Image 1 (tube, helix red, strand yellow):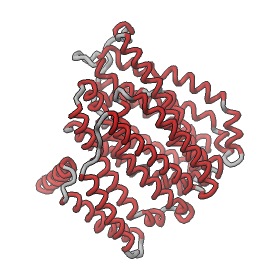
Image 2: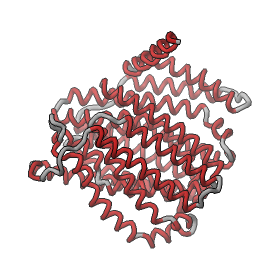
Image 3: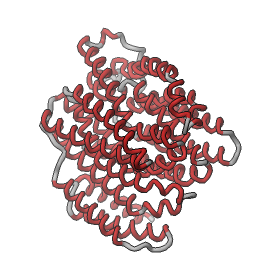
Amino acid sequence: MGVVIRQSVKGAVATYMGAFIGFLNTLFLATRFLRPEEIGLQRILIEAATLLAGLSQLGVNQVGVRYFPYFKTEDNRHKGFFWYLCLLPVLGIAFFGFLYFLLQQPLDRYFAAESALFTDYYFWVFPLTVFMVYLTVFETYGNVLMRITVPKLVREVGLRVFTAAAIVVYGMGYVSLNGFVVLLTLAYALACIVDLIYALWLCPPRGGLHPLADIPRPLRRDIASYSFFLMLGSLANLLVLRMDVFMVSAKMGLEFTAIYSIAYYMAVIIEMPSRSTGTMSMPLIAEAYKQGDRAKLSELYRKVALNQFLVASFVFLVLWLNIRNVYALMPNGAYYAQGIGVVLLIALGKVIESVSMVSGLMLNYSPYYRYSLPFILLLGGLTIATNLWLIPRMGVSGAALATLITVVVYAVAILSFVGIKIRIHPFSSGMWKVAAVVGLFCGLHALWPAMGHPVLDAAARTAVLGGGALAAVCILKVSDEFNGLLKEILNRIRRLGGRR
């Protein structure tokens, strides 16, 4: 776990640097310089491109991680692995890009009533999609080589800095709305180029594309089958993750998309550390499956799940302690505060996902990966049904509740299946301790009276309640890795203080 912890910490630092910039972008710059419908347009363009990219990449991330051990060589040539990664999504981009433009008229009719502005910028989803796909390709190459920090910095920090600049430039009147959309697209193009340069510097691919004959035929068939199932699974999975935004836009309008997206962004901060830990765990899980090491799999499962749940729960606590203060400080915060219920429901879902995500990795890299498809297809149908039912009745909170329901159902299903088929589970006494601590301090938060100015109130709640929860987790020795990391951080601070 040493390399996982080190790279995860570096990745988490990059992620939270980006989260801070994104926090300023979304909650202060966007609400200051963009109208609600423009915030909604920005969000739906990114979400639509993310959905299309998720399908077009044909599972390149998981395919690359799963099969890299079969390509890896001591001379770092890796049998043309880099070029295969680059070629895999080409067919997906061509097919799904054609399908996207083929469906333009029915999609225009679906969004025209409440979100006509999106139809005006329909074309820009495609170039965004291409850049997103290859951003993932180059990140995957760094991932399999156990180097995620620079790609994380590019995605989490670089993209957000460029987005901040685009918002300010548009808000100050230097470019039109068309120019703003172009700048957003160029941000992803630039990030893609930087990641490509880093990938080629990290481990330059030697020689051209190796002939397919170098890959055994059974392995080629397995890769094709795995990629096909991932593509089908991605369709339903991405619908689960994105359908709420699309349906809010179509049924309620881009203004409500802005309310929902800002609330969703605050909640999604919870999952950011899990991305780093999960990303770094994937190659180790794939290697353990290849070696048939069940003991190592079980240890990885429990440790990764515990640490992800611990960090996600702590971030949830700090977020909920300060949610009203954030809205109070936000420009036009009274308008966007309609999304407080959304924050709570989505945040609870993200805490649950911190565990179920590890279960999904265990299933996707196992011989039972095909069984993930019926789970995700079921959830795709459940997502559509619950959104159709709840949005007309509860508005944006209904969309968030629909998401929480699908997350809970998926978590129960995937945890049960992995437990029965693979005979491993993620639960430990540490998880129950974390849940008890967070529950206790949420209760204390409810009893805490408001202290006037939002900054003063936030500082007091975070220091006393957040600090108390952190101290309790350390005293209870929930996680050796977490305690060791805190100890290392404190030692470095002391050393820096001593030098001064």
